[in-house]
Image (cartoon, rainbow, N blue to C red):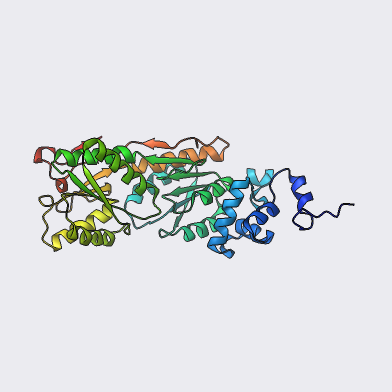
Length: 357
């Protein structure tokens, strides 16, 4: 006579698994080595579960194809819209986000939506906590330069329509700038100015864009017969750039490409403090082309991404997903970049200020 126990001895585990026709909370708990209640809390109240446990549970859930019941909604709930979308940024103090936020807000407003903005201070933990709080209030989620793991992002995308900017995660819709092309243009420009050795100053270790840029620089260096090296990671701030400058002073090379413009500005500041001439002694290139780069001395060469278009494109596609459109998750949508040449990279005056696409 059946007792209703599963093979692992948990009452009802086997029968429940058979009723659902798919992996259950008990299956996830067994594989992850935790209690079923811990699995439930991971998805319903993730702030009450340790980071390590939550990551293990999410990874197992994704592997098994489990979807938490707590995020399944009735038909009436699906039809109820809040006309709000969450925009999660890793560092709101970075001017590169200003145009992205503007583009997202304008596209949302045109569709009758408002933006709920969350700042996560470059922390994957704070990012998850922000999403936990905003999830019930929004119709969709826009993640920018997310620091969460791929598995956490995929699980989030199963709960609400989700799109990522400046990162690619398999199975999740994304919009990215053409980092490889931008880095290629920077390398060609420096090589054309006679800089045959380039130092790349890395940003956050968890940054997808950082990895893409370094890979693109290495590939370009092989084709252009350049010598490249990498230092970091550093904080993506002006102070991080200043720290990188101190590293450069120990092992000098003729050209430097930094993860972003804030770091490049900090690098320039430290060069001035130590009497190093830019561009005579070292050429400097940043990323993002934030406002005001032509106001510093020397003005900063930078790889420009269409930040406003990235925000608008992401919101337009996200809102289509909230209305039932299938996400374009097979590969990222790629928007073009260009190199804006200024004084810091030592081209002849006739070409200073030009854009190379």
